[in-house]
Length: 272
Ligand code: CAA
Image 1 (cartoon, rainbow, N blue to C red):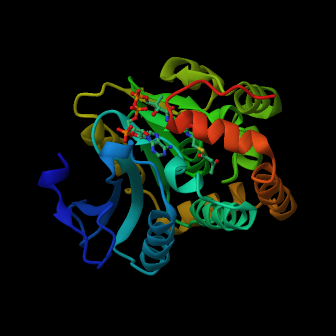
Image 2: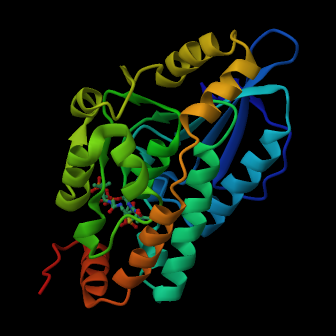
């Protein structure tokens, strides 16, 4: 499906992102499809990808031909399996703080965006992947999708708005359970909880999502813009600040070294 779409006319120097467009068939209007393309690492998101996503969205803000954006992952196994744990293994607390703030810049930009941004979750949406999906205006999931916030198993906390946005979507109780258990849930549980809006078969998943998104593109862009603004106008600045401060603090604690190195050795962590 991706191969059949047109290339988007914006030069991203980042090989880990593919930008495609779907023509809506009227007045040159399009849907932009952003694909995180790091399949071998299950589309884990590193600093460069975060920065490029922010740059692309800032550009698209002024492109009146793009009416909506779909964010998805390459392949059929993962949407985004989280922040890049391999790079995080070298981070000191200040690096971790910057990584958290950068991820929060992205999720805040997504959440406050004036055109609908839809997460097409095609597999694992874990940690930062679940946080990016949660910041999107809608989440459509394939039937193999798996959601979770496993940061506590790495000895750290969610750092890209998970402690802020999840509770808005699924309530404090469900958010707390996901965030402190590190449990994963499948698409049916996610649908029941309100974490996803709809579930589609994996076969032709992107086409089915596009078909659904096309329907919104018939509506007034101005009315959609104002609706999104009104829904998402809460001021969560203090909560975001608390989260990034505590994300930094988790890198001062030995549990982060125990958890992250256990993941890299493919072992279970033994916290003291
Ligand atoms: N970062 C970096 N690499 C990752 C990754 C991640 N988040 N997730 C998977 N990978 C890599 C694996 O290390 C592996 O690489 P190698 O082939 O070089 O060993 C490759 O992707 C394939 O992964 P697995 O072999 O582990 O595949 P699997 O099918 O056995 O398991 C999985 C899949 C359950 C998703 C497992 O990969 C996993 O648990 N990944 C980590 C998920 C996670 O903890 N995410 C949260 C990250 S922290 C975070 O996001 C913080 C924040 O809030 C900002």
